[in-house]
Image (cartoon, rainbow, N blue to C red; front, top):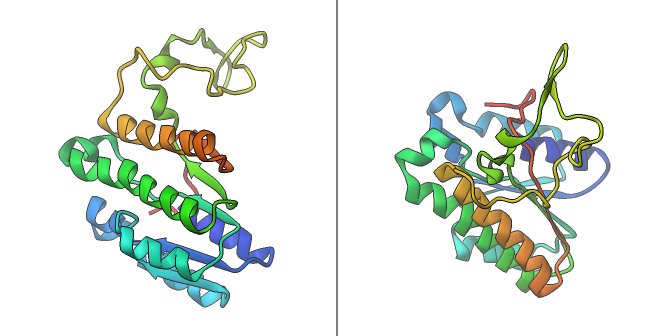
Length: 204
């Protein structure tokens, strides 16, 4: 869903966009979650959009992609997104979320190290730490007090340690840390966005 919205946004402002997807959501959640319908809509609406059917864990396929295109921006929105599903197949969850992220980072480092790398991480990397925040019940939402350090949003100063994580949270935390470390070690422009429960009109 996030990936297809990015395709729409950047295509609308004139970029050539290349998307990679394996339709793994159909495997995770069944036929109703398949993404082929969305792919066809994007290809029909945006002639400058190129779709590559591949798995981000496939080093050869990802390497071939980066050999053939010069990217200025990489938005990594591919993931196994479910806590419950991760518990059913922990190895699959970890290899997609952590190993797949490593494959993408290595391809960027090798072929386009100056490309901005945006990772759609998750607030689940914090485990249950946010449960310790002093939330105040307001009319329509729970909110932090105005003088709290995280009132305007939680940043990476909140620890991800000493908390209970789901297996999904762990695989995403591993990927999140990889993205940060590639930025530090290799001076690559990387960033992690730690959203939660995101949805929209393209959701499946």
